[in-house]
Figure 1 (tube, rainbow over the protein chains, first blue to last red):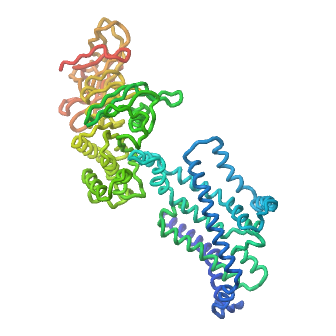
Figure 2 (figure 1 turned 90 degrees about the horizontal axis):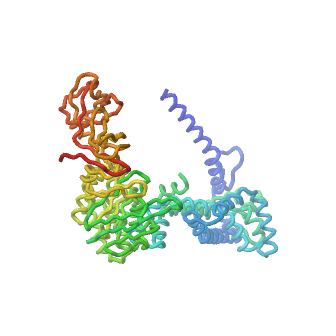
Figure 3 (figure 1 turned 180 degrees about the vertical axis):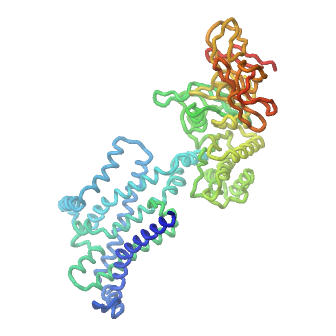
Length: 272
Length: 347
C-alpha cells in the first residue's frame, strides 16, 4: 500500500518535472542557443554555426543602449518612489486605525481587477491633456500605479506579522516609538519588504503596456525595443540576444537579494 | 531598594470594567504572584504596572513616585513576556545589550554588562547565537537577562514559563527564585498556575473578575482562604452547599459546627483534613475510586445522601474500592455571603 503510493508520487513528480522542462527550460534554452547561433537550419538539433556576430551587431546599436539606460532609470525611479509612498502607507494600514481603512485597502485590489489595458488607455487620454504622454514622468506615474497593490499589500502583511510583544519589549527596554520602528519593526518586516521591492523593480523593468501607451514614441524601454525588433525584422537572433540581455538585470537583482537577506528569509518573504 | 504601591487602580475597556479599583503594596525585594484564572485581570494589572496600559483611574507608585501616566520606555520596570519576545534579527548579545545601547553606554561597558547578565542566567557561551538557535528554556533565560541587565527597580513577569514543559518550568522557576533573592529585586509574577504561585511567591494576590480577592503568604492563602473563590481556586477542596440549622450542618454523615443564624451556607474542607474510618457495609460513605499518586492516595467516596468526599491520605492507609468508611473532618470553614463566618482549626 505504502509502496504503491510512493510509486505513484514519483510518477506525479516526474510528470511535473517533464512539464517544467518542456515549457520553461526548453524555450529558455532555445533562446540562449539562438543568441549564440549564426546559422541554424531546420533538421539540425544544434546551431550549425556558433558565434557572437549578432551580439556585436546588437550592442553596436545606440538605440539598444539608450533603451537599456531608460529601463534601468525608470525601474529605479519607480521602485524608489513606490517605496517612499507605499511603505509609510503600509505601516499605517497595518498598525493604525482610521476611517475608510478597509475601503482604501480594497480599492487597490479593485483597480487591479479592472482590465488593465482599458484602465491605461483612459489614463493615457487623461495624460494627453496634461502633456504627460511621451514623457519620462508620465511613464513613471503609470508604472507607479501598477506597483501600488504589491507595494502596499505585501508590506502591510509584513508589518502586521511583527509580534506586538516584540515591539512592546523594545519599548520596555527604553526605545522610543521611532526607535522601535527603526530597530525592531522594520528589520523584522525587511525580508518581505525586500521581496516586494525586488518584484517591483523586475515588474517595472519588463512592463510593456503602460510604457508603450504612455511612453511611445519618445520613451523606449528594453522590452518595447525588443518587441519592435521582432516585429520589424525577421531575424530571430536580435530578439534572442535582447532576451538574454533582459534576463541579466533580474538575475542580478535576485542574486543581490539572496546575498543580502539570505535564501530562507527571502523565500519566506515571498510566502514560500 | 524599591517598593511598588497601587492605589485605587482601575481599568475600563469601553463599558466593561477589566479592573475594579484595587490597592496593593509590594515591599522592597518581595516577590508577589498575581494568581487567577484567565480573564481575572491579572495580566491587565501587570501591563498597567509596566506602562503598556493606562489605568482609567488610580496611582502606580514606584518608590513613592506616580508613574501611572509614564510611557514604558521611561519607567524603571522591565518585563519578561510570555512569548519571550526576543528580537529574532539580533544575536543574544544584541538582544541583551539593546537597552544599554539606547542608553548611550560605551561598547566595552555594554559587553561587560551583557557578559555578566549571561553568566547570571547560565548562558555565558551563547552570546553569539540567534534566538532561533536556542531552546525554549534558553530563550526565556535570555529574556530574563535582557531585563536584569538594565537593573530595573521592578521586574515584571507575565506567565514566563507557560509555554515550557513541566520539568523545565520547575527548574526555571527555582532559578528565577534564586536570582531574584540574590539581587533582591522587587518582582511581580503573573501566573494562572497555583503550584507556580505557591512555590515561588513571598505573597500571593488571588484575582477574580477584576478584583483582588485576597493577598497573603502561600500558607495563609492555603489554610485561611477569605472567600469561597480563593478556597476553591487554590488546591483541592470539598466545597459543599448546605443548610445550617440550630448552629450545625449535616453533610454526608458528618456534623459540622456552624454557630450562626439558620439558612444557606457553604462549607469548605481540604481533602487531607478528611479521615476515613472503616465502618459496616451500607454505613458512612462508599469508596468509588482510588488514585495512587505514589506518596499519597486520592480517594472519592460517596455518602448515602449523595455528597461526594474528596479524600487524600498517606499511601499506607488501608482503603479498598467499594468498601464503606465513616468520614471524620478535622478542619472546616463555613462561608456565607462570600465571607468566612466560622472556622474550625485545631492547630
